[in-house]
Picture 1 (cartoon, rainbow, N blue to C red):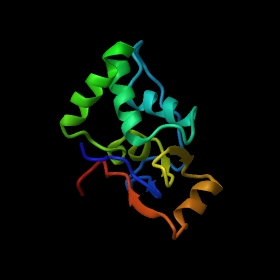
Picture 2: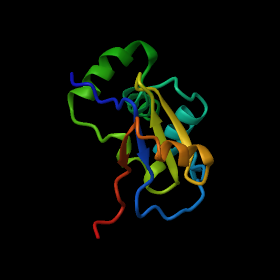
Picture 3: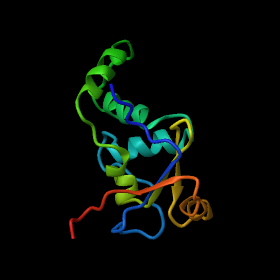
Picture 4: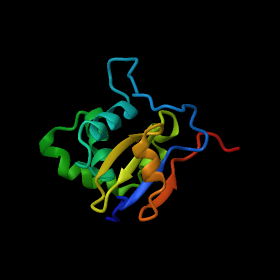
Length: 136
């Protein structure tokens, strides 16, 4: 299995992100949405999870996969291509930059924050943008 994690990378918000200040995603229904789960995992546990951990954990929670089945299900999950966090609504719609440290662990930074600006200017990091929502 190929390593999907980013290392020493800053995923900046998309060029067409509609907000100038980060917003916390909210579920409108009972079941938590993918952006809500991604936000909760990363924001409540900075530098604990890797991209692979977050992608699989969100899948596992949304599909009610029991703990004892997770190792096998994780292998199956990553045997198929999965969209990376550049495609996440956190950077496309909600205004959150994602910092990946040298171990691939993640933390969120609001687009309007001083920390976001410092990370954006940090030449020691690889810089990529979240994917645009529109093709134009």
